Image 1 (cartoon, rainbow, N blue to C red):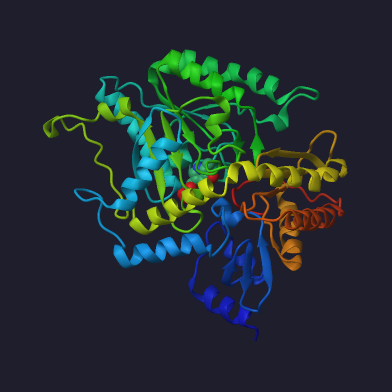
Image 2: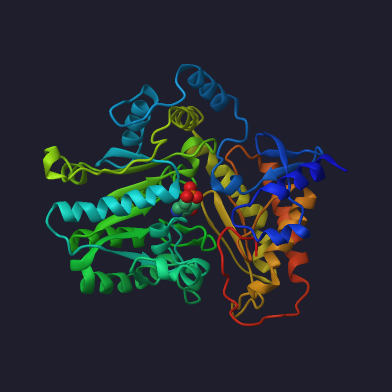
Length: 468
Ligand SMILES: *Cc1c(COP(=O)(O)O)cnc(C)c1O
């Protein structure tokens, strides 16, 4: 038995994996990873894979990065953890100071959570509670965009729009208002991203005009709807949204959990619209992909609405056991150091251009509807029919074929349904990008050459993080 098989068998007898139909592993081998090094992951049989999706979008400076490793090692000998109520520590203070400086002016307070989903819960609760504290209890609903994803916990699912969740867990969800996404994949032919994003905004304007008295906040994934298939839109939408939220007295929550820290080409996506949200949710790349940590930044105005004598019971009494963990904060500080010292945002421009040129030929592929890109995220949408953009029925699991081919060739390229995408660590080389483009092209050829459709029932892609 190979070492991979040995670990796989032990794994499959005790583990239940995330976002996985476990029965798939009767056919699909699990890949046990022994070590990481830069963009590479190495399994127990010595085979290496380029991590083209940054291990679910978290890793930005490679696996086992020496600079991040050292900072964590130093921290663990000093202080591994202390509760953050009544106590504090240097890494969390330093990190908060740096996040306040790094983000748009006016985001002056940082509240910590342990992961992206719980960070969304914090933002939703804080917004709702703010309106309660200022005497507007009617403002308790949230406005979301179609095709959104904001996490897996129940309130986070409520503001998301992934069919699998909204169908299966409908009975558990909050009552939200949903407006059409500015997603430019669906723009009329010949229309620019900007014109389309601007035109779609009328739905948001209408919703706010009608419901603002009962709305606490609008929540969006700025510029890229990640889990919804790496769908993209123009920053003008965010600008219009900021203006409307101000006009109607509604909070704006930016979920930059996936897009923060350089993914869209700027440190934060909101910079491209020149705006400041009322809540900015950060996680994933915050710790360079090392440890779970999330930060919800907000304004002094929100903070002051909770600041009062204890007896008024206005405090935000929300807590997670590992809030502001020192090891995670140390990893985050090392990550921010690298951004600063290596001029990463500037250097990424050449890598983003290479991603574009290496995949440009795929736009002509008979089963590719679109190759789209925002900064360091590039997506290739496979379709059954190019002209009408008719999607492949999810039951055909075309993305899975790309995934399997890529594994054979030494790449971790896990699609979202029929959307193949690159979201690589920023330490990837131009040659490695070319290699990924080659593997993706081969995979797409293999996945689309069989044109027989076996569609039955609902053909809309049901789930997130699922190669289909
Ligand atoms: C991943 C993600 C989340 C959830 O973060 P977790 O740490 O996985 O709970 C929320 N919002 C967006 C936009 C994400 O991509």
